[in-house]
Every structure is written in structure tokens, then in C-alpha cells.
Image (tube, rainbow, N blue to C red; front, side):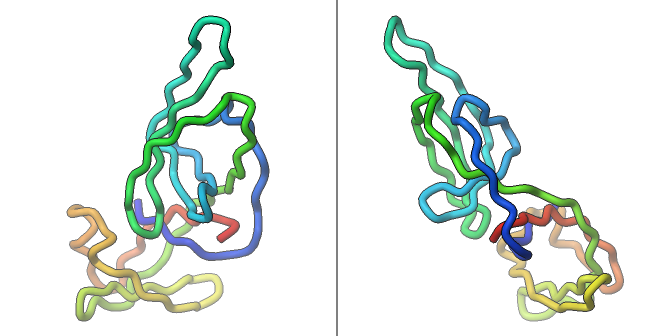
Length: 131
């Protein structure tokens, strides 16, 4: 599944205790996908949540610790299909079949099984709303 950050604002708030694997959140100004979540309860203190986040644009992973009562900004994801126009100089050029917008994607951001894209192929994307 390819990830592409485009479209209008669609953010909502969620408590850190409600985070789930696969959700898209904003963390320190970056759009991140939650890779794993662990809930920690230590004695009489407040519960905490430890989450592993992956930045959508750079691919960098971060481990963060939050209080369970912290509010996190959550984005919405929509699955969409795009057409591959052509592959050139380490980039894949795609088109949105609804709006006919064209945009490039760097081959470096694709996984190994996604680097075999060819012209006229339909590609599923995870479209992150709110970026």
C-alpha cells in the first residue's frame, strides 16, 4: 500500500489511551502512523501509553511516551486508486482518475514489492486526509 499526503482538513482529537495500531496522527508537526501501542499501569500513578510512530513523509520511526489523558490529533485515511503514468529517473508519476491531477512519487519511498510498477497500472494508496 502506498501512502500519499494530500487533500483538505479532516482532523479530530482522541485520548492517548484510545490510540490503536494503524491510526494516523499528528505528532510534533509531522503526520505519523501508529505502528504499535503499549499501555502501562504502574502502581497508583497515572497510566501511560508508549507508542511507536512512523513519519509518513520521511519514514523515520519514533518511540513516544504519553499520559493516557493526553489529547492527540488524529487524521482520517481514505483508500484510493491511482493510475501509474510512467516511471522515470527514480520517480513514479501517478494520476488521480477523478481529478486528473498528476504527481510524482520517489522510488526511495516505496517498498521492494512496490518498485515493480509499470505504466497503466492501478495502484492502491492510503490517502491521509488533513495534510
